[in-house]
Amino acid sequence: MNAKLIPWIFVWIWSTGFIAAKYGLPYAEPFTLLLYRFLLTLLLLFLIINYKKSPWPKSKLEAFHLMVAGALIHGIYLGGVFQALKWGMPAGVGAMIIGLQPLGMALLAGIMLKEQVSKSQWIGLLLGLVGLYLVLFDSLDLTKELAFDGFPVWAVFAVIISLFAISIGTIYQKRFCSNMDLISGTWVQYFSAMLFCLLAVVFFETGEISWTRPFILALVWQVLALSIGAIFLLMTMIKQGAAASVGSYFYLVAPLVAIQAWFLFDETIGLSAFAGVILISFGVAITSSKKALINSKA
Image: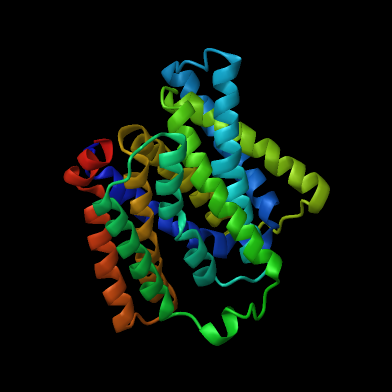
């Protein structure tokens, strides 16, 4: 696959996660849904590993690092977002909070990876953040949602925990798991996330599922497209690029979600949203440019 196409394919698939969650969560509790998602993913990956003869981690320490990254990136991040949506948090509010991730990754990259974030990268990240808020502004009733109308304050804490989990997990992945085998390493990470979700189901949920057609379709999409396809692409991006550059692509998720919502649910896209898309595009271009990446390594 052309390396230049990987980020764009990833962003489109990743953006469908909001739609898949919206279709699946009415029929199952958050961690129960994720538990089944991870169990099916582990089964498919195990078949692929046996077919390709992929090597397993060489040491217990390597497996430990993979499990830590997996619990953060898959278990805690997705669990927090799904729980917040189940509690009634609007997807737009959650996306605004998660949209801070690239800035968090840039800061953590300097601390954990000793990556120097250049001025042009900071400009790109800030432009993307402004653009993200413009995209979401059109679909929000700020007078109500900022007052947490219709959902508990715990939903906000859940998404903030998710934000920290995906940011730290991505940096941890690059710092300690850069040499992992893509398939077997991902299996170990999902195994860790599965254990995390299993504990959450045992202690906090009933484990009941309503096996309807929308739920089955949403589950299949989450397994094949998101848990396998998108994650393989994300791990490839993390392995190939600087952390701040990888994080900047997440800004493109919000406008794609807005477009999908317009197509599927007749939600309109206003002028501020279009302005936001333009700012996001500029921000990603600046942050991901070769000049910015060279300056960040200087």
